[in-house]
Image 1: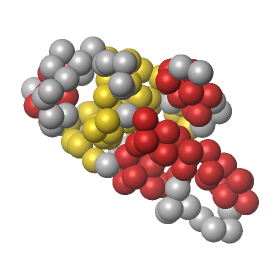
Image 2 (image 1 turned 45 degrees about the vertical axis):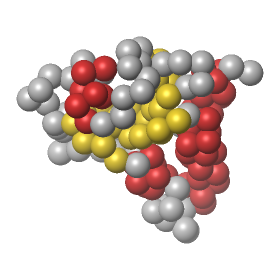
Image 3 (image 1 turned 90 degrees about the vertical axis):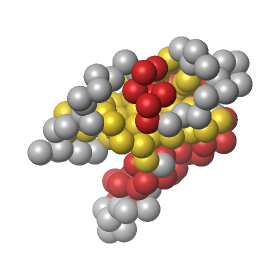
Length: 132
C-alpha cells in the first residue's frame, strides 16, 4: 500500500474538531531543498504563505491532542474513535521524517500535518480549523 493510500485510509471519516468540524485531505507538496530544516521560513516559502499571514509550527502530538489525550473520558463516541486519531499520529510520525504541524492564518486556520517522505516531497494531511 502506498503512503498516500495509507493516509487516505487513516483519515477516512475523521474530522478536525474546532468551531466547525472539517475533514482531512491528503496532500503532497514539492520539497525543493530536502536538506533544509522544516523551519517557519522554509515552510512559508514551500507552502506559498504570504509574509503577512501568521504561520506557527507545533508538534503533531500537540495539534492532535484534542482528539487523543485531551478527550472527555465519559464521551463514548469520542473514546470509540480516539484510536483512529492515535493511529493517524503514529503513521505520520513513524513514516515521515521531520514530521511537523503547521498552522497558517487567523480565524480560518489551515492546519497541515506533514513531513518528508522517503520517496521525496512533503506528504501529509491538511484540514481547516475555525477559531474565533
